[in-house]
Each structure stands twice: as structure tokens, then as C-alpha cells.
Length: 439
Picture 1 (tube, rainbow, N blue to C red):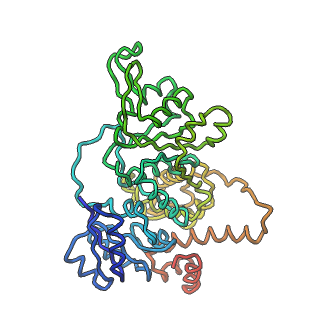
Picture 2: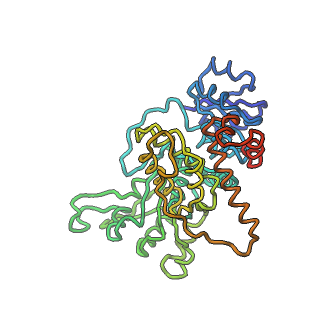
């Protein structure tokens, strides 16, 4: 069923742009801000796209969200921080990208048609998978996803462990014409080399001693869908040649079989290693490298995007408090500052793990700094080629932005209450928030 989306904006042209990009995925209506309340009393919607110029109040967002619709702000680059501060579920930037609209808006259909449960190894896409971040890197990533999702081009995702490579692969699959077909994940580093060929290609009865029946491999399970090869740099050379044949001819052969099989599959790969170095060392086939590296995407480590930490913390608190059965409402400014100041070598996955631990330990409704199980701060690398004043200001700016984002969120946009809690003059707090783009 198509999602029902209401665009609350001064211009009806916004509705037209959204409707064109979402196509049959959504039924898009428009209303001027002054008439939004009346429209919501008369009709039900799954998602509301709310213009964030001027910034909406927390009260307005709560009023719109009380209808059960997901409120998504239409904002500039600071949209996620603004959504975080006023209580909106998400934000989307102008100019719109089809992939971003689909993932943040159109997936929230009220009544999707029931489907038979997929086998566990087919790993159906989860509707909760949304890339969380702020700043130009997220917009650029969504723009590139929008370019490639509608094609069958092979995508190569690179980035450190824990940066969300599988999430990006799922986003591409969810935004592609193959969305209703299987999404199959193969971790090339987690399966022993002796078993990996059988896992991928399958076998026929009698192919080896324990082969008592025919077995379909994960490649066949992904037919008409997407095969995600995680850590492809760990793929043995013998299997690299077989994968190359799949990419070139769309054919493969099960172990012990005499005939080829055709397969219609889109392949996405990911690695935290430098494939060019592996090619130079003879550990990765150059011809396969060119086949998989058609459309590269790179994910930055969390330490290079500290402004995303408050958004991720809010997301994980909301995600896990019900599962853990704990009434956690927020993370204290001191705890948030400590999280923002940690390098997280394990990236987003490590942040998620550490925050879950802290939520379990927390005695009250607020996660405090002492609840965090973080190692002692390591000596940071100092770029001595840059002036002391510049480096100091960067550290101050990162702390101030993280502190203000969480402070304003906890107090639901009430600057007077936030200023009292921070021991600051309200005008000074407002000026600081404006300077950091929190509006």
C-alpha cells in the first residue's frame, strides 16, 4: 500500500516535487501551515513533511505527531540537529533526493500487504534501517545512492569496521527495483575458506563425502535480488575467479555439477581494506577489482563527524529503552561530552554497544558520565602544523555543539528552562545556539 504523505509548506510546488520523486510509493497531499490542524482532523496520514523555515516549535511537532504520523522536517544542512531539538522523527534536505525521501518518508505505509516470512538466510530489508547523520557527507551519500540505486551497477562500499557499510547496502537495495526480492548477506571473513564455496554456490548430492542431498547456495537464494559480499578482501583467490564469472556472464556452477546455471543478481561489496594494495600484493585479482569497483562509496569514520554523536545517542536511547525495560529519557550533558570526546575506533557499532551498557547500568532516567564504560582518554594526535588557537577552537566548538544539542532536546526546545539548567543567560544561550546552527 502506498504511504499517505502530507506536505505542510507555503508552496504547493513542494508537493509536486515530492510526488514526482516518490511516484507510486506514496499518495502526496499539500496544505498551507495555517490549515494543517484542520487537514489532520479530516484525514489520516502516515508521514508529514513539515517546512522548517521558520523552525517549528516542539509543541507544534507534538501536535502534528499526536495523529500517529511520522513528522519529518524539510530543512537545510542542520536539519537533523533541528529535528533532534524539536522532537521531530527525522529531517530531509532540499534539493530532495529520491533515495532519501524513500528511506525517510515513503517507507512508512500504514498497511503494507502481508507477505510470507522470508527464510532466515534471505535477510529481508528492515524498515528501521535509516542512515543517521548531519552535514554535507550525508547529503552527498544519499545523492550517490539515488544515482546508483535505480541501476544494476555493482557498488563497492569502503570504510572502517562499524561505519555502517551493510546499512548503506540495504539502503541501496530498499531504493532499487529489486526491493521486493531477497537481500542476502555473506560475510566472507566469518565463513571458513573450506566452507565458503559451498555456502556461496551450493552443491549436488555426492559432490563430497557428507553431501547427502542437493543444496542451494546463497547466490541462488539471492536470485532476482541483491547479494551483499561483506569483507570481499578476504575472499580466497580461487573463489575470486568464480565470482568474476558470475559478474561477467551471470552464470555459476554448483559443486559436483556438470552444467551451468543462470542467475539474475545485483552484487554489492564492502571492505575495510585497501583493495588496490591487495591487488599490488597479488592477493586480489585485478580483473575482479575492476568488475566490483564500478561505483565506489566511502563512509567516513565516526571520529571525523563528531556532530553526529548526539543524533546517534538519541537514536539508540529511543531504540533500546523499551527493549531493556528501563525508563531512560536522556543522556546527561557531561556524559554526552565524554562520548563526543572519545575517538571510537569501533565507530558507530562501538558507540551503540557502549550506550547499551550505560543504559543497563544507569540507576535513574538519565545516563550519567559515570555510567559509561569508556577507556581513559588516549593522548590525541596533535597536528603541529596548525596554529594552537585553531585547534583549541575546534575542540571548544565540538563540545559546545554536542552540549547544546542534547540540552535543547532534553528541555524540548524551551530555552528558558535550558538556560536555567546550564546556569547561563537566556540571550547568551540563544546566541550560542544560533552560532552553531541550532536555531
